[in-house]
Image: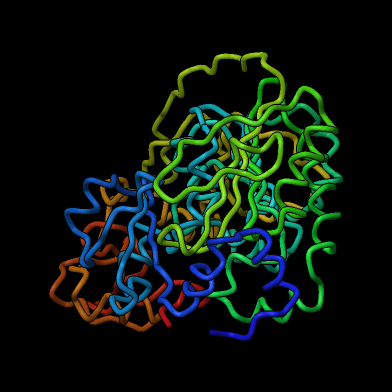
Length: 440
């Protein structure tokens, strides 16, 4: 067990009382590993039919599973095809606890690296709009890559300070805040966080958390719902933030969260409906989750999502929710009809980047490849996932494909799930897989 600060141990002893020794014992046990099926690409039922790993359901989500660390799903082609996202099991609860309806306009306020955003997008089913925001531009680069790998078409990736988003006052149907915190719940998983705790403690984050939740309340519609979560145990960063929010906005109330075995309630007067997760009580790390609603007024009923086929080029016809194809310079984008006004904001990408018009022909993008189904591209190269050429492709190498009678630009697939593009000439595939996506 890593050395834990004495002040932290004293805090936990006061918090856990008789459970304190059990908590300490959890540091001597192995952590748990989880993956969540990307239902924007494949149903849970279909994934379980092809999954090459031994999986065990996680009780608080319908698309999450434990896996054995030694199976290393991050090395399988299905990971690069965006069929699942690797996520710590407890971290799956916040996005699961936020009720999402098709057509909702949703803000993930502290979104990087994208695990929770991709879950929210799965539940939107391509409808409505998701603003995935993180104040760090560098972290947003990772967020964007992850959302594009998951084939998400109805999201904006933005790098802004939430306290400066006044134009969106009373705008969002749902908001998720996975707040920056002292990370106490992750000490077993990431011992490096212990040193940061010694440097900053809890007070450093609580002031920031109050600013974030106060801003989010202003951005939330009347009748809207919001999840506030952290991966820390400190009441100063958990229950006290919720109490602060309730005092700030008298129209706010705490809603119950569907619980699973081992979940513990919040510990202050008004937070009994909140959920605390402890590593000695559940098969996962530490978390705190609260579900809030602003006023009782019902949200406007959303219209049923309409889909249509877009012919991007003579080779590509993709079915997407209603929206528009827009051109900016040589680049083409698909934008959902629900896209808000983003002018003047630090936006990395809005909607789906389709590709570029170059020298009179269309060059499809990597993000488009991940949003396509095999049947939506005219010329495909489908390899078995255990074909050695799949890993060579993911390593950006040239492939010998003389056994396929194909020429020109192809959509490369593993077991019919797209990975990216390449161009075949005389039986040799020139690789167009992006270097920053490369298999490592």
